[in-house]
Image (tube, rainbow, N blue to C red; front, side, top):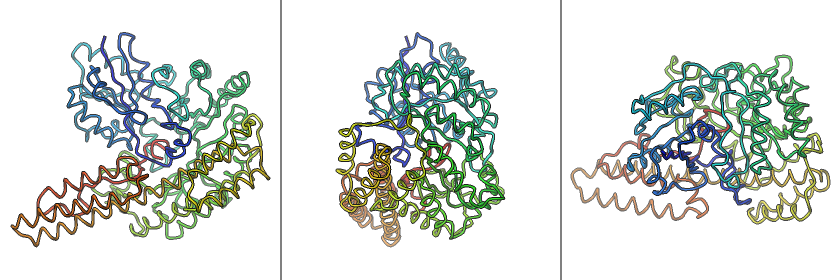
Amino acid sequence: MPNALLLHPRHPPTYWGHNYALEILGIRAAFPPLGLLTVAAMFPPRYNLRVVDLNVTALENADLEWADLAFTSSMIPQRPSLERVVERCNRAQVPVIAGGPHPTTFHEEMEGVDHFVLDEVEETFPGFLRDLENGAAKAIYRAPRKPAVTLAPLPRFDLIDMNDYYSMCLQFSRGCPFDCEFCDITKLYGRVSRTKSPEQMVAEFDHLYELGWRGPLFLVDDNFIGNKREALRLLPAIAEWQKDRNHPYSLFTEATVNLVRMDDLMDLMIEAGFDAVFLGIETPNPKALKKMKKPQNIDMRDDNYLFKAVRSIQGKGMQVLGGFILGLDEDDENAFDAQIDFIQEAGIPMALIGLLTALKGTDLWARLERENRLLDKPVEIDDTSLNFKPQMDPGTLVEGYLRVIGTIYDSTLENYFDRCLTLLDHLGPVPHLHKPVSAHVLYAGIMGIRRRLTPEQLPPFSRYIAKVSKDHPQFLPLAISLAATGHHCEKFTRQQTVLRGFKEYLKSELASFHEAGSDAGSASGSEDDYRREALQRAEARRNAIPREFRFAGDGIREALAAFELALSSGPRPPAPEDAGLPVLGATGRASRAEAM
């Protein structure tokens, strides 16, 4: 029986990953690798399967010794980890099969992969396995059409330890009827929203329930309401299922802002147990929204349409999480304060802000290519890297972006807690969404957060908890959960500031080395001395970084490794902007969930 090793590359730290909040709970990762678990269900019984999620555990040599084949599925931010995984598999002489959104778009730029199974694989994967077993597998397999999502099998959640994750995931639909200029979802999955049947979704709910899962459940659709008719068919079935079992799952999903125009559907979402929704708000600037082809976010008769939309959805009982973009063509220097003001006034605690990225294959990419504005550089896993020429001065844009995230996740968390209180002031009470929690559990949660806050954050936190206890006691469990999220977002912002400063320091050192190499001429001893001294200074700088950030993610290690490589390349290393230092942080959107 063949041994198939299913490898999920590591995600870089992100706001969406909730890394520091999950530490409080002793949980390793936010979400399981749903795509890989779905593919796992497509293998015939004769295969032995093993899942290694690098967000949860390390890839051991014993795993590679066991494996006959390695299968990976990845998104754009996972690229650095995927490259390391492929390299290790190559050294172990384990054939690699790659699929998922990142290889589907970028397979021509990837090395070390034996076979690509691209696009959606429900109709192509069985044929690939037959060809592989017969020794006739091709290098690339493409789906001839967008398959019916009803063909997707029940994901193999039994292959993971669900206790490692904060939330489970299921998928109801693929595709989106809108075609936002910057987004590649419609390029990957089409503009016709294909859905599973209510019976199929209920079976997946049953499967998780029988495996013992209770708690958050994320429906990972890029637009849950993309097919309103089918969503209206699904929700009553889910509501009945939840009611019969005393609402074991708290549901959340992603949707477009026009959800606010679907009052009947929102009521059914609440009945089914949805307590949060992620909206691609992008910007309060209607001119920029029009330019990016986002009509669903605009009402030309109402300048406050987006604000009122958020408030209406909150009033139904659902928290709004928001995605925002800076660097749009219609942005000017007023965009930064406009973003801050909107986020604060609307009461959106979890606001995920990124610089615009031009993704290959999108309409934005095509337009910027026509305008000769694309930069000859790859999409980076970075929060301040631009792969195109913005209309705004790049330095002003990056500085403004850093000011926005530094304000909404300020070091005291004052602004964050203000947003939480605004949310709770307007959140509609729904008894089945906010069950009573014992005083002991509440106290443990409060103290668990207090122990992790900085001294300057403790007074705002205490005032926040006191006000919620007085004005909104029914929301105290939610308020504690929101505080944990705020702790993560502020600490992650601080971490990225530290990593960004370290990277800039290394660039400066490379520039000095370049200059010194030019002056040194053929004096190789001088070059060697400078190289050794530069490495010593870099090590000292690394050691000066607070320990809690020094080992966060792979950024410091990768930056040092690239710095050492650049130094050893000769007396004239590349200029700093081309030095190949890895960028730090996270963005590069192939979807919201993967990017944030």
